[in-house]
Image: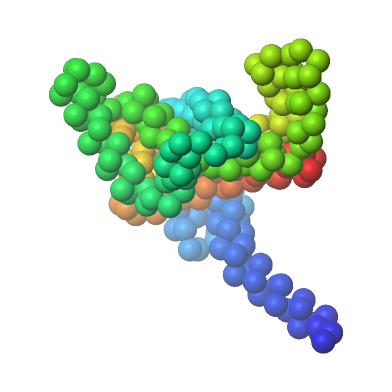
Amino acid sequence: MKTNPYWRALSLTVGFGFLYLPIVFLVVFSFNDSAIMTSWSGFSLRWYQSLFNDQALLNAAKLSFLIAALTATAAVALGTWAAYVLSRMGKFKGFTLYVGMLSAPLVIPEVVLGISLLLMFVEMSKLFGWPDGNGIFTIWVGHVVLCVAYVAVVIQARIRDFDKSLEEAALDLGATPIKVFFSITLPLIMPALMAAWLLAFTLSLDDVVIASFLSGPGYTTLPVEVFSRVRLGLKPEINALATLFIFVIGLFVILASRLQKKDH
């Protein structure tokens, strides 16, 4: 049965409009001169200027980008090893438990994960006196726990796809498993590593729930800062900030998508 092209075009238009029209309106009103967010009074960049003069938001942004970079790096390191074990080590005792624990952050609600990590850090502080309060370290650990599962899924798919005979040939020629990993496997999966890094960076940068549980005084991430302000009433600076977020994260998503396509 042949689909009517006009019906297909209408369906696509309605679908994409439902998804993206709110974002379009947000971007447009970020350039609105009026302080009333729902009333257009002319084009202006005043809210972007106001945004860049807001020291609290700038400090929160710096902290978020720092934690996101650290999280992505650690998640890729741990996730690569986890994916390699799943793809190359075969079934072993405790394999089901290993897979379950690795995949748990994908299905556990972030609220539950945040509360669990908070309780763990509280007990650690009581027993060892460390960490002394929540800060960069606690947020970083929480984001790494969340992102490792996503990274492992991306990298595992790539490791399973490429030709295993290349590794076997290197082993036959006398290379050690470590040498094979760094000389053969790692270069072949590098595009997947970059895509996974960008994915983890975006997930960390966008997180509100876990960071709200694990942040402390003076260590507020940008999403948590924005969320706390939105509860007190929307301001035009939020539109400007959201527009910059959409632009930055959109670039990361496009880059990650291109890397994955190149990898395949």
